[in-house]
Image 1 (tube, rainbow, N blue to C red):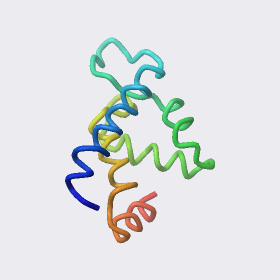
Image 2 (image 1 turned 30 degrees about the vertical axis):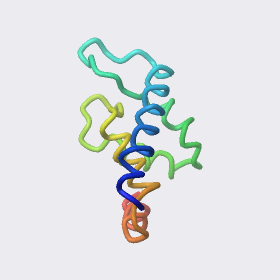
Image 3 (image 1 turned 60 degrees about the vertical axis):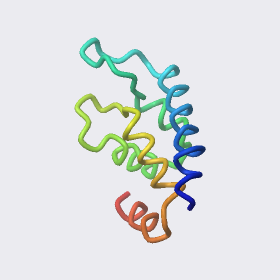
Length: 96
């Protein structure tokens, strides 16, 4: 994909999607002051069957302390899903 399209259109789109999902998410713990997405909201958004959505959520929360998705993780995962090469997508599917 064209890097200009990714940086000018696709990335801001996913930032907006993240902001909407963060508003719909349950209130994070007091010690987690940055916006984040909870598990239920993410699973409703991706709407994948059973274990596939669970594995996708684990990819999105990799290394997270509170089991919530922050903006950088969400945007990176969505770009990896929608704007990467076929080999990268196959690697993503295999890691799930």
